[in-house]
Each structure stands twice: as structure tokens, then as C-alpha cells.
Length: 216
Image (cartoon, rainbow, N blue to C red; front, side, top):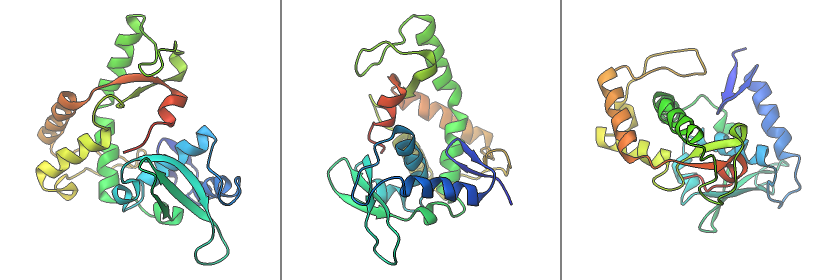
């Protein structure tokens, strides 16, 4: 069977990925909040794969909880949004083949990763590896380049897609590497790079601070 990815996590098969998610689901009691950082981050990346991710995320993800069974005997996951509302989501739906929107988002992030890398290296060279949220010193191995001081990455990407008429207007090449292709139109790729560069307001956070940020 083909390998499977959830965010940057590689699994030998889709079944292995499903089992990793199930382990999180049954690690907690029904009604409890997912409070382990690695579990929280996995569920954030998993939710991004949902075909209705924008609707599920809403105002942003504050946390995840284990919801009681709705149909059948098994519990499920629930999103706790930053505005206090809650909504359930099916992890099995998330594990279906990625939507075109999700594929485009993955490619978009890959196309601009050099910007985040350059920002990190510049801060490191300047001796300013400190959290822009708490002011605490950061270890280079536990530092995240984040969008918390301006529009989110997904918001910047959504604005670009909307300017073209929607996600389907962005054509991708095929690739087996991490499920990623490239922009078929390289001029459009350059436009995306400039669009992102003009709008991204980057900052540094610790890994834990970044994992606990609301996801929008």
C-alpha cells in the first residue's frame, strides 16, 4: 500500500496513519481535552485535511476534546474554537484522499519555505532568538517561525486563491514526493511568492507556544 502523510509525519501506509490517530482518540477519556502538545499538533494537521476545514476551524482552533459517541459505540473528536463554540469532525473523513484545496495549500507552503528559513537564519545571526510573545530565550532546535503577528498563512493563501477565482484555478503538476507537486504555471508561482512576501508578518515562538496558538 502507498505511504501516507499527515502534515510532515510519514506513515508506511494509510492504515498506520489511521492507527496513530486512533491512539490519540483512545488515550483520553470522553469529555476531556487533548492536552499533550504532540497530540494537539497532530490533530491540527489532521483537521487541515478535512474537506470542510475552513468551516470546521471557524474563528480558529483553541483546543480539541474527545466527544461522546453520536452514531455507534465509538467516541470522536471535537474542535473547541477560539470563540467558545464547538463542532465535531470525523477523522476518517480527514484521511480520505486530500482535496485540491489541501494539495494547493501544501504546495503553497513549500513554495515559500525559503522565506521562513531566511527569516530564522537572520534572527539567529543577529543573536535575537527570543520569543516575540513571551520574551523568553529560544533554543534553535525548538523555535518556530509563526504568523501570529499578522494574517495567518491560510488567510494569505485563501486571499490569493480568491483573487484567481478559487482553489480550482490553481493547477499543479503531479508528484509522488510527500504528495506535493508544483505550480504548473511558474509565473503564477512567482506571483504567489510576491503576494506572500508582501503580506506575511513573521515572528518567532517556542515550539510549545506555536502549537498552542489558535489555528485559523
